[in-house]
Image (cartoon, rainbow, N blue to C red; front, side, top):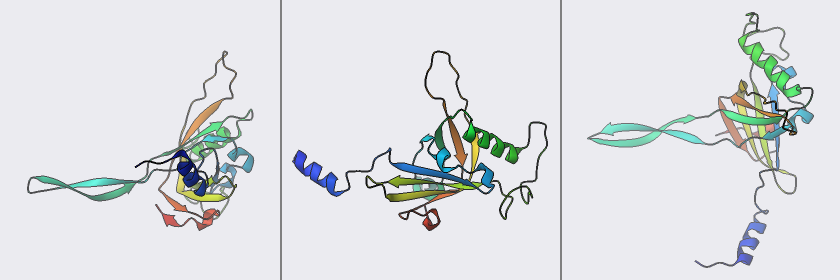
Length: 193
């Protein structure tokens, strides 16, 4: 099938010009609000990804043949790359959040549930995050919300005399599932993946 460049340009223009990877907004909200990202901190999240949708195949053998059925939906860990500011604001929050979950360096631990030092109605140490894909018009086009999210890995920060780059590091998050929707408000994202 032959096509012309003008047809291609016309088709992509009618589709809003195509989704751009640099047009996104992120937010991380913890149940303990002292771990939530402020608007300024959210701007320091350099890269992330819209989550994949995966259904593991369930193989059933019958009469010498393997048949694949739909198995369980799986949700891989989610990773963000953060630009480090000189106050280490996000990194310090992640260290505190992780210590709150797993215990302090001296071995002291707080109970996971019903911790009276946490703000809000619950002592759970998880939160949620949203990735909002923006259009070239600046409006929210798609919203992905991660539920029951918590940091599972805080990557190293290399230091190097020969580098003049801004430091960056990754945070890996575990979560139970994600939802997807087209409304800008995170509370409107109710469709499970």
